[in-house]
Image 1 (tube, rainbow, N blue to C red):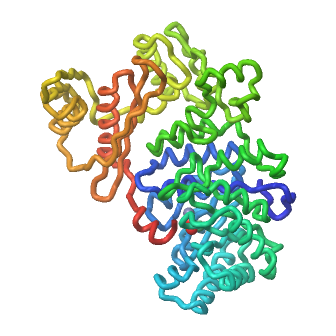
Image 2: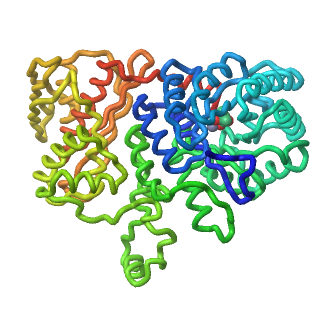
Length: 521
Ligand code: KIV
Ligand code: ZN
């Protein structure tokens, strides 16, 4: 269990907010089971504190935070609350099940936020005192954040931080809510607070940076150099607008450049790649190819000079080893003669612990893929796991034939089982995917809006698999579907149908980012 109070001076706590600030980014919704899975992986990876959600935001958020709390092993489980008793009580109700729970309460302290809340400086101090004291009466571990701290007047920031500490806050988080600060300023702010606020030496300062100007990682590391000992971050830098500080970046930066940043975390870095892939798959947010640490090209050496250098001495162009982040060699993983045991072992190596039923299902899909594709790479196996189809599906694609030509419109002949009954339709559209989606809609009329359709190739070559993500919304609820296939059109239809199956099963998530953005950035 994390003991923050007695942590050595070089130990930096990692506070992951993928499931709260990350999930708050419009469209990055995750189902209950997905959140449970990601929380389990974060816990296993050694994240000190998991911010599991915003319990008052919806019944779904509450259920996710309490179930994550009930299943926590080593991580502290944290729930977010605005500065009011109802939010705080709800957060406590959810996190109290954890071996160690934390309430994180916040209020916007900059002049802009004081205007919105119609509180003057004194009024806000009173509110902070009342809410932090209330939280502390419920829970021994209370984090308080002055939202938009980097645009709050220094004197006033000192005053509110001092109030929160006096009322029992054990961690003070300094958010750069709009990604406005720069490294030197980020460091100076922490130093100023440590010097000026009475009692500052008794608590942990945290840094929470947004990436609007691309400086979130640098700002977080600068804050640590100045004395912050908790970094708030997300996997893949997921988060509102341009996202948050990326966990993999700060952790690997402190590890690789430990000579100039002599800090330690409790993170098992070999778990990074798997988490990155899973967060990307379940959120539907693809990782950019040239993303630091976890991007597809991060360890790829294409140019002759680079390849030559790396072959002679890998350190010529590589500052970290791929295996340090859990990236296995890009080898031919499996062939069509490989058996179940080999598949189970390979999937375990890639970070997937498959139960018997899941193995059975993945094995069938693996065999089908191996029949079609000459070489099955690790990335192909990872993509197989992206298929979000569930066991008993209301809609199932049985047969699809697409006719394409230089003269439009394109045509799709689709047989799909709807509630167990096979139905057939012939539809046209502006392109093959449009024709197929029209066909699905004719067989299963619905009023959902298509918010996102995204295709990415898994490996190189014309026989590469495509991973497709689809996001639908209806009446404020969002439903996502993913699928992978060597046939891009078929993958698209299956991803669409997977999202519709989720809609049919009521497995959506309220798109409450509007409520959340007004309160927490
Ligand atoms: O960015 C922000 O200010 C936040 C707070 C709720 C900490 O996310
Ligand atoms: Zn934030």
